Length: 309
Length: 309
Image (tube, rainbow over all chains, first blue to last red; front, side, top):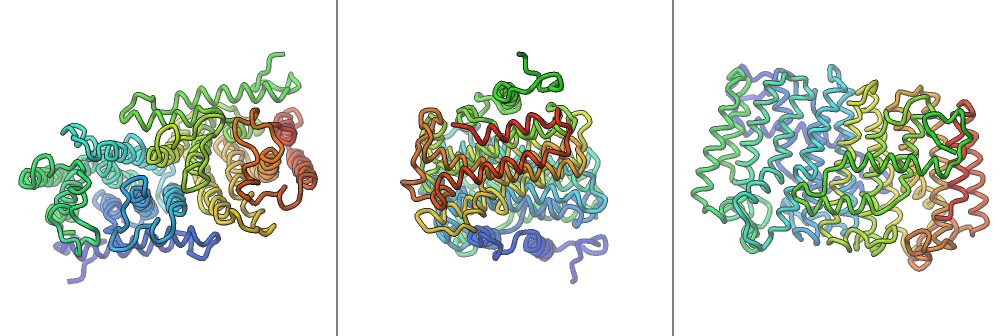
C-alpha cells in the first residue's frame, strides 16, 4: 500500500513506512539546507556532514513535522525548524562523545566525530551545528504563511529546551552523577531535561511555527513529555538487553560505567510497566484531535514502546 | 563633565567614560537577563557567570548599542541582542581556551573556565552560552516598537557570522595553520572570519533590530569590516609588544606558538600603517550620518587604533 502522509484520511497508517517516508524527506531537506562539504574551510563542513549523515532515526524532526500535520497544517511549512532540531540533537551527541565527557569511540555504528577527525574539529563541529540550527530555524520565516512572531516564539522555546534549563542541564547532572548513587528525584530531573525537553520542544515548535491554536499546542506538549520520558526509558532498557548490532552502538555501557538509569534503580519489569503507562497517557492527550488526524502520533507512541533499536 | 549617551548633541564625547558607561549598562543587563548562579544544576550556572563576569571590554554589545543610537534609536531597544552578542563572544573564548584548542590557562587575568572548573563543564558552559545567546536575541521581540521580522533578520545575520561562514570558520583555519607557513590570503580569511564577522554583525544587528534603513545598515557593515580587522591587527601588535599586566593575559604567545599574524608576516610598522588606513576608511563610512550622531563611532575607531589593552 502506498503511504501518503499528506492524505492519511484514506489510509490506515502503517507506521514503519510512514516514518521511513518522513525520514527521507528530512534527509533530503538537511542535504539541501546544509553547506556543501567543499565549502571552505572544507574540514569543518566534512565533519558536520559526517556526523549528521552517520544515521539516526530523525525522531525530533519527524515529531516536528507530525505536529504541524496533526494541527491541520502541512509538513512543508515547518521543515527548516525540523532540520534545526536534528542539528541540535547531532551537536549534543558530538559533544557528549568527547573524551572529557562520555568518551565514546562509536556512535550509530561508525567512529565518533573526534575519532574520525580530531578533538578540536569535534568541538567546533558541535558549535557550528548548534549555530546553524538557529540559522535554519530563523529561516523558517521565509516560508509562505509563516509569521515571524511564530518563528520567534519557536526559537525561544527551543533554545530554552536546549540550554541549562533543558538538555544541557540534564547532561550536567548526568556527568556529575556518573559512578555515584542517584536519588529517584535526580534521575527524573535528568531524564526530563536531557532527552525529554528537546523531544517536547520538537512537537511544540512544529505546532507553534505552523500557527496552531493554544489548546492543540498544550496537548502536544503533554504528549511530548510522556513519549519523551518513555523514549529515554526504552533507551535504557535497550542499553541493558538490546541487540548491539541492530542498534549500531555498544550495549551494557551504562552498567559498566555505573550510569544512573531507571532500570538500574527499579529493575526492567517496573521500567516496562512505567513505559506502558506513559504511552497510554500520551495517547490520551491526543483525544482533542480528530481520530484520523491523530492516528500517526498514536501509532508512533506504540512504536516507541515496542522499538528494538 | 557628565556623559549622557542619550543626549550627546550637547556634549563633545569623551570616549573613555562614554564606553565605560555603556559597559556598565551591558553588565547590569547581563546580570538581569542571565539565570542566577543558584539555579539548578548550579555548577553550570556558576561556570557561565564566572566566564561572563571575568572582565572583558564588552566591545560587541557596545557596538550594537551604538549602532542603534547612530541610526536615531535608543540603546534600550537592542539591549537583549547586545547581551546575546557578548555571550557568543564569551562562549567562543571558553572553547578556544580548551586543552584540545589553544590550551590557555589564563584569560583576562584569571584562570580559564576549564581550569577554574573542569573540561566537561567548560565544554557545556560554552554550549549553554551559545544557546542562551539565541534565546536572548529572540527575546528582543518583546521590546516596544521592535518587529519580530527585524529580530528574525538579526538572528539570521548573527548566526551566519558566528558559524562556519564566520567565526567558527576562522577558528578552524587558525588551528589548522598553527606552526605552519600561512599565505597572506589565508591570513586575511582568518582575520575577517574569526573576529571581523562577529564585530561587523554586532553593528549590523543593532541597526537591523532598531529598524534602521538599508543605507545606514550598509554603512555600518562597511565600518564594522574596517574596525573589525583593525581591532584584530592591534590585538596581534599588543600580543607582541603590549604590557601583559595591563591586558590581563600573557603576551608573546603568538610568537612562541608560531601563530600566523599580520605583524609576523609584514612587521609591526607595516601593520600599524594598515591599521591607520582601516581606521580612516571606517570613519569615512560614517559620512552619511549627522556629525553629532556619528561622533561616538568616529572616536571609537580612533580609540581602537590607539588602545594599549
